[in-house]
Image 1 (cartoon, rainbow, N blue to C red):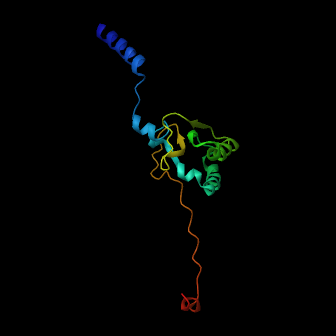
Image 2: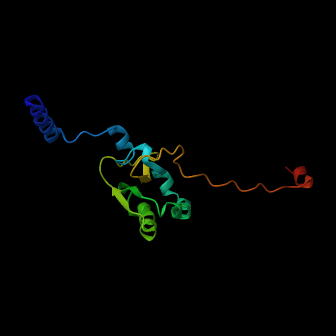
Image 3: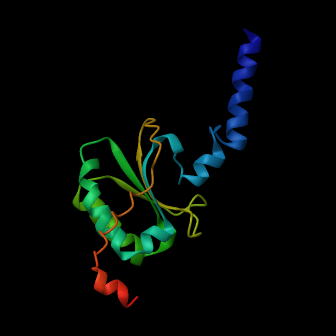
Length: 147
């Protein structure tokens, strides 16, 4: 019994000095404090800076409305980039958090916005789906003569 009490005291002291133990700290830093297994959708900082991405995000956002999800937004990007996404989340009643700590990076390939679940969803592809390619215009044989 005394060993168990000593272990509890040691654990309490260790937590007080170093903080609570965290699972997968590198992965949490990369995914704005969350884990990869919880991510449903990811936008990079570069993606968020493209104006057409806001429209695409608006179009797919309703499919996430009635789920127990939240949005993590890299707050270090500035209001000019994050503002439209914050507005869309508020309009669709989806809870969001602006992340301004060391987890938020400004690299173009770093995570800028994540839609995350409370539990693991293990979705294989988390990136915004690409736009469908426009059909190529058919040209006649006369047009090919002048190419």
